[in-house]
Image (tube, rainbow, N blue to C red; front, top):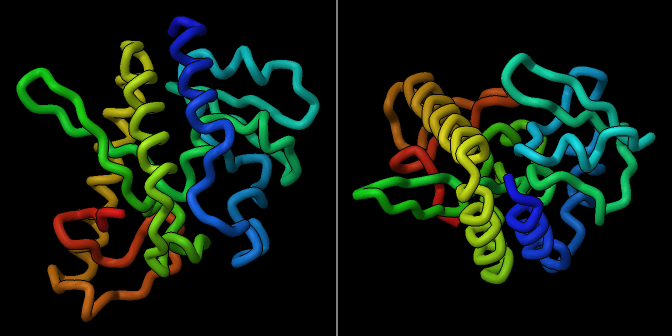
Length: 191
């Protein structure tokens, strides 16, 4: 990825947050309390940004680099996946055109009150996430990550719906699996 596109994505998310409040206060910042095997997938070009930083550890999961944090970081140094969370830019492609919807990241449904309570992000945050995702999509490797993650999120939603017996959200099966979420119409709750 050209540094310009990566830096542009970071700049778009530098000063915008999903909510008017610190959502980490709802859950004790559970998204920042991982372990040696829990982290955020890095987009192409980000590994170099975090290499050698004492506050982080980079592991490879075979296909992507994953950034492990230890619960405390300079918010200005967070990777893009952390800046998107608890939402994700879900890619849609049609007729050679790409667009993104900002959806709840269902991987956080068991630990993130913002996801399981269906809190809506600020409009400025949604615009910034969509624009940052378009910057990332200019690079073939990042476009691949965006596509694969979208496929995984759709598969997780289908799994959740099948576990729910195809019923709507009025009859949800409660799961504590960190990869499953409340039932969403058509797979995703638009935010």
